[in-house]
Structures are given as C-alpha cells and as structure tokens.
Image 1: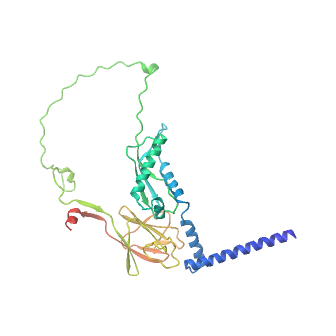
Image 2: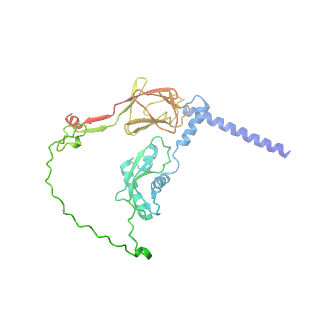
Image 3: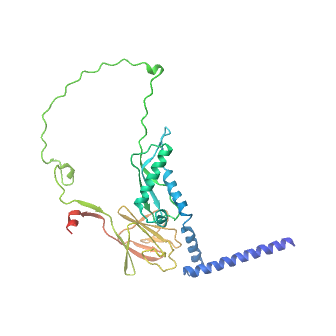
Length: 325
C-alpha cells in the first residue's frame, strides 16, 4: 500500500512539472512571437546564456584577474611582467566596467593596476605598461578571457660571483698585440642620388621630400537586404532579433543573437553565435568556433534569410589631396 501511494505522489509531481513547463513555453512563445514551442525554448535558453552573470563588482574582479594572472616565469624562477596586454570584453560588459564606455580610460586604469600588482609581487616591470581593451561581439556577457601579453620586461643582470677553489687560479696572461695605428683614408664623396636607388625603394634616395604622402585606410562594410542598405560600424556588431541589431529581423527562425561581425585589420569577418538554425556564407555553413572572412558580394544567410555584403576597397589615401578637399 505504501509503494502504491509513493508511485501516485511521484506521478502527480511529474504531471505538475509537465504542466508548468507547458504553460511556461506557451508564455515564452507569446512573448518572443515564435511559431513553435521549440523555438521559444531556444530563445529562453539564449536569454539565460546571454544574461549578465554577477554584479558590476564581480565583473571588475574578473577584469582584474584577466590582467594580473599574466606574466612570464624564467628558468631561474624570476617572473617578468608584460609591457603590452590586450583584454577582450563583451559589448554588454563595457558599460558595466566604465559608465561612459571609454576604452582608453579603462585601459589606462588597467595598466596602472597591472604595474602596481607586478611591483607588489616582485616581478620585473618594464618602464611603460600599456593595456588595450577591445570589444568582441562574439564573447558571452559576464565572461572575460585571460589577457594576451607581449613585450616582456628584461631579466635582472646577475653579478659575477668570486671564483673559489681551482677556479681562482688565473691562467697565464697571453701577451697583447701592439696597437696598430688606424690608416687614414680620404673621405669618399657620395653622389646626390644613390645609383642603386629606385622608385620602389625611395629610402635609398637621400634628401628627397615626399610630395604625396599616403595613409592606409581600412574597408567599410554595408549590408543590403530587400533593397535597403545598412552601414556596419568598425567596432563590430551582432545581427539577430535583438533591438541593437543594425539590420532588423522579424523572422522567428532567426535567433535573438545570431551572428557576430568584426573588422580584423582590413578584413571583415563573421561568426555564428550558436544559433538554432545556423548561418551560411556563399552557401557554405559556418560553425561557431572560427571567424570566416567575407568579401565583396558575399551572401550571408541567417537561417535562410539572406543579406549581401558590400565592401569598400581597402587601400591608401593621398593626404595632400585630402587636405585640398
């Protein structure tokens, strides 16, 4: 009799659980406007994953830990601090770390913090420490990966220890050769132009002023959809059904945070953010592990919804012409 009552209670618990889940999915389906409960469950999971974890104080501690954990350990046991470090943060975490979203000020604070920590720990510290903060749309909010370091400090110079035992016995000093007086030769007159200098190697040509200086410029990106064009900022962005997406998507098959876009050097790259229905570039499905470079005319399909990339050509600009304009 006791076993039967226990089974009945367990069955009632399961039924209540199923009813609660069903009602919750119905509510989520009405909130997100999805056509199926599976899509509603996916949106709820995406919300939970992208929701900022921890308070601002917790996030600042993670920022500090991403910096202070980076150094080099020499075979002698000496620890060297880096001269340059790069920290990546999610777009949602930038305002939580700095209310004004000032990347330069956040980097200066991080550099002072890292240098003070290195001195306190007894590490060899370079004369100047620089911290660069980058916004990575592909990062999950609340997670700050370890910083990338370069330009480490020089190890300390060790003083020579006095020789003991047999090492203290000096060797027979070899006679030094007599100093040979230097031979004075007449100075060679260099021509005004080096005959080996060419147009491709202007550094070999002396005293020639650059009449048309140039500056490298990176390419711009625009996305075209249904006859409309959307400009993408160089800081990168996230495409999807979230309100901040520069391209509006109302299709339920497109995830809330579907695709990340960034400018790497002069190349634009995209990465799927674990969307439900996936992303393709020129008909080839991409995964969420690596960034994929896109080109002029590349067709990006978010769950079948297509946008076309229009990329300005990267190159150089004549500064003299630009000043005249």
